[in-house]
Amino acid sequence: KNEVEQSPQNLTAQEGEFITINCSYSVGISALHWLQQHPGGGIVSLFMLSSGKKKHGRLIATINIQEKHSSLHITASHPRDSAVYICAVGSNSGYALNFGKGTSLLVTP
Amino acid sequence: KAGVTQTPRYLIKTRGQQVTLSCSPISGHRSVSWYQQTPGQGLQFLFEYFSETQRNKGNFPGRFSGRQFSNSRSEMNVSTLELGDSALYLCASSLATSGNTDTQYFGPGTRLTVL
Image 1 (cartoon, rainbow over the protein chains, first blue to last red):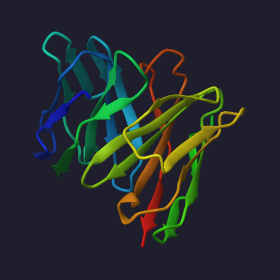
Image 2 (cartoon, each protein chain N blue to C red):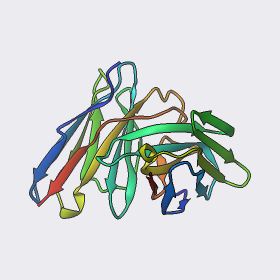
Image 3 (cartoon, rainbow over the protein chains, first blue to last red):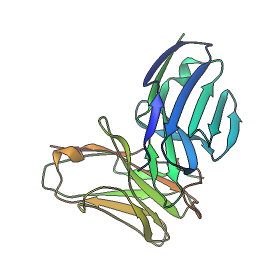
């Protein structure tokens, strides 16, 4: 099973700050997903990466396949970014996803 | 396009009972995955179906089962409920014609409480 580690576990930032959330995994993967979960449970897929870098608005996700590491960056953070961010990896064989424990982000005004 | 829908949204059962949860994927999506989310274990993969076939199963006991119908709608069933089965059960749909490299679209979840 692919062990997925996220850091930090909890993060508090002031509005406008640059935020980085990290994800490391133990074995090779087919793809890495970044998910956002707001209070109440709804999960939204932010990015799916198999190499390089993707950007959507103020969010940037990068992945280093050799180092088995991915980062999610939020530029100019806003209170509405407060949520749990979850990293999930797909194995090279099969269709399952393994999840990190999540990073709880609170952005204060 | 309508999103992924799950019914019911909330459910309370007692130990020993069984429960069936339903998931309707986004139109055109043929893959449905089920996940269990608990405060202690986080999100865990239950199983994935594509065109009525289970392609992958997570590390859960046989009390957890599922199926997919020809219209891609999926159900999961938990028999002989235990207190530890209390969780948020999420389903997600995707095109997923090749592996797990497609974006997954999640439903709102069914919150199951076992008393």
